Image 1 (tube, rainbow, N blue to C red):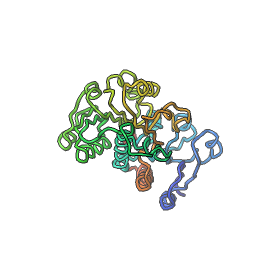
Image 2 (image 1 turned 180 degrees about the horizontal axis):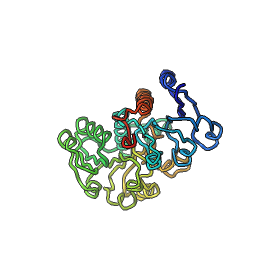
Image 3 (image 1 turned 90 degrees about the vertical axis):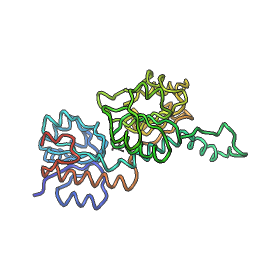
Image 4 (image 1 turned 30 degrees about the vertical axis):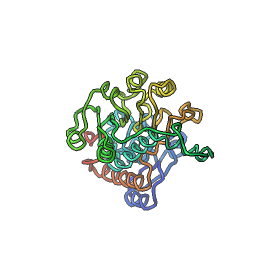
Length: 323
Ligand code: DGY
C-alpha cells in the first residue's frame, strides 16, 4: 500500500498524477480544525503534507502523529512552527530557487511603477483626465542612476542587484547579516550599516524573511531616517514593517512613496488607509505569481516531498539535521 499524504493546494493535473504515483493523496481545501476533523483518519495516517499559505502549528501536528515530512510551495516558511517540527523530527522542504528571478522582476516592477507613478497616471487616463499635453503634476522621478538600497542580500536580492546594476546603472548599497563578496564584485554593491543605507538610498527595498528578529524591523524610526524623496519597497513579508508607522510616514511626507506586495494582514483589508494614498502601489502578493514560476514551484514541492520521504534531503530542506 502507498504511504498517505495530505494535499492542501490545487495542483496542475500532471503534478497531481506524479504525487499520486507515489502516494495515496487526500485533497483538502485548508488545514482549519473543522477540515481536519472531517478528514480525521487521513490526517492521523498521513506521513506527508504538501501545500501553502496555511498555518502548520502544534495543534495541527498533534492531529498528525505519523507525519514525517512537510513540503511548502513557497520559499518562505513563516507559516510553520519549525521548533515544533524539529522536536518531532519532521522534515520541512521549501522552494528556494524556483522563484528568484520572478520575484526580482516583481521588485523591479514596484520600483518602476512607484517612481513613474504608473498606476496613478494610468487610472487618470482611464478616468478621462488626459485632455491635453501633460504637465508636472503627472511627472514621476527617474530610476536610472539612482541609489538602490537592498536590505537582505539573498538570492532575490542578488537578482534585483543584477537588474539594477546592468539595466539601470544604479549604485547599490546593501545591508545583510554578512558581506556578500559576489554582490560586491559583480554589481559593485557596497555593504553598509542600516543607518547609512537608510540615509543614502533613493529606493529602500526590503527582501527579508519573517523571523523573530525581523518582525517590525522597520518602524517610525527607520522611516524618519530615510530621505523625504525616498521610495520604500517591500516584497518579503508584511509583518517586517510596522504598517501604521509606514502609513504615517507616507501621510506626513517622511518618505515619498511605497510599493508593496506584502502586508501585515493578507488579503489587505479593503478599508486599509494604504488604499486611499495616491503614492502607494499595492499588489496582491504576486511576487512569484506567474504561470511558469508557480508551476515550477509546485513541481519542486512535489519532488521535495518524494525526496524527503525517501530520506533525500541534500537540497531544499530547511531542517536536514532531523533526518
Ligand atoms: C514565497 O514563496 O514565500 C512567496 O512569498 C510566495 O509568493
